[in-house]
Image 1: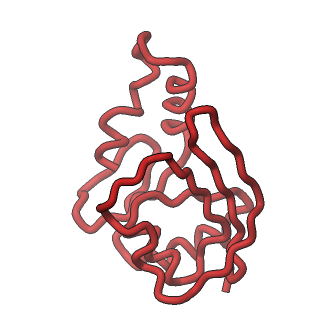
Image 2: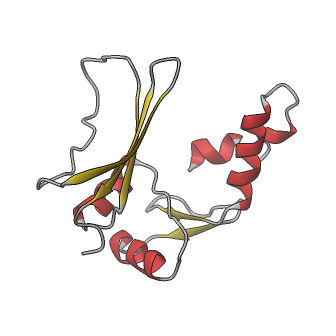
Length: 138
C-alpha cells in the first residue's frame, strides 16, 4: 500500500507520464480499496483499513459484491489461495529466467486444478494467462 499510495494518487498530474499511466492513476484513486495490515495506523485515497481475519473479510467482500475483486501482495494472496477464495488467476509471464527469488505459489499446500480462459501474447514476449480455479467458492 505504501508504495502505491506514494505515487498513484497524484501521478496523473505529471504531464510527462504516458496517458495510459495517467488513466490508471485516476482509476486507482477512484476505486474503493481495502488494505489489510497489522502495522499501518491509517490509510487514505478511498481506502479502508482491516486488521482482522483476512479470509473472513475477503469472503464477506465477495458475497457482498457482484464486481471483480483484485488481490495484491503475496501474503494476502496466499491467505486467499489457502481458503479457496480465488476464482481466477491472471498471470503475466515475462521472458526472463531469474534463477532465484520468491516462489510464485509458495502458499499452495494442495493441487489446484485450473482451466484456461484466455491467453494473449505481446510483442515483447510477455504472455498473459487467465485461468478459472476449479475449486473457487468452496
